[in-house]
Length: 366
Image (cartoon, rainbow, N blue to C red; front, side, top):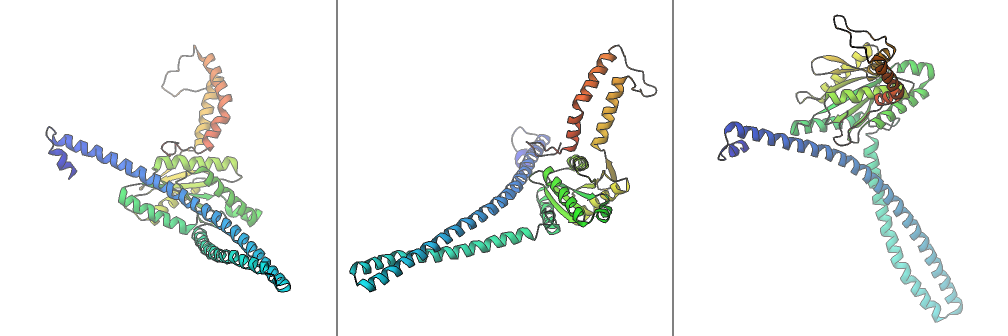
């Protein structure tokens, strides 16, 4: 309909009109995807804020309830003393004071009862929110569990079919975890699971979703992220865990397609994971929908870069067969400069490999 309206505008040819429609569709699609991403982040922030507010309200209402109960007991005791004094002395003033105490006590008792009901209702809501969270949280690692993962994938697939908002997932598996359990015990194994879960939490964006899939496997869901961004994220997580923890992980990456079900997406990522295991562990594979591909390891690329720079600095660099050697007139100065850069930036480069960086503007991994 929009294309027909634009095409009927005077002075516009059909190709120009179609181009205008395509541009408008792209702009609207971008804005809609951005709205979805912002809404997801807002929903997660609101849920955390609601939880915090409810707990605070519960605490405040309990404090006020206790204070009112204490006040009610004090007024009651004051009234009893007045009644005893009035009976002993028969004074009119004591009777009047007793009536005044009763006038104060009645609204206090009413307010105390009302607050008690409010506290009980608030407590019920707190328990409901806690139950909602707990049934979707893994008790050991405190990340989301399989139920939370299934619900999230179902929601994202629905949004992808409705709005075209794609996403990717990564499955990580701790290498040689059974051997670790056998040699060091399950207590140490639990600590490793908790540490890996924390490393994943520290690495993801606010809109990402971390879940324990089962055993020693974890899943990270990345909304509005293509295969390239998922590759970058996954390998940096792998490198970070290898450098900061005493274990390594293997991973599989896949991007969702509206032609498959959530189970098929997880199966593709799982297939990529086992390809990484079979290739030697401590590495990432991707499944592009038809084939498996290894993801270049950023620490290996960094090592090759340092080796090449060091070779140039020491004069031992080799040249490809059939290609002329470069001019070496300025080689000593360049080699000295490269050596200084290598020594000065080695730790920084290693850190950039291990740290997962999300663009502060777009929220994408780079």
